[in-house]
Amino acid sequence: MKVLTTDGMGNDETVEIDAEEITGKELLETLKISAFEAVIEKNNVIVRESDVLRSNDKIKVLNMIHGG
Image 1 (cartoon, rainbow, N blue to C red):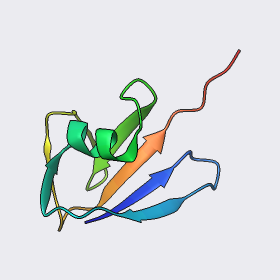
Image 2: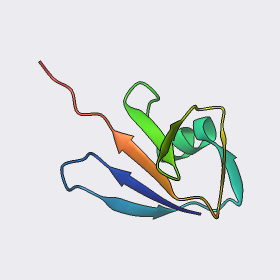
Image 3: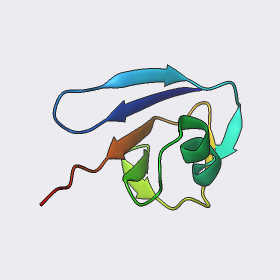
Image 4: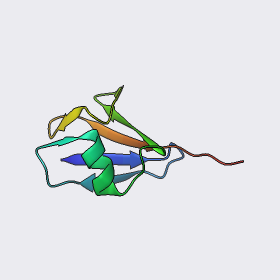
């Protein structure tokens, strides 16, 4: 499964995950990304961590930029 990770600032990376099917939570754990720091898009729609992602879906993990 191909997953695009991005911070929305042009720092994009495509990662290959060895899975046909995975939950959003499992994906974030695999990528070592906190659910508090990112959202998952599946076919251009933001989904919950409990949603199942399949290898034929277009998956994007958007890392949130925050600061103060």
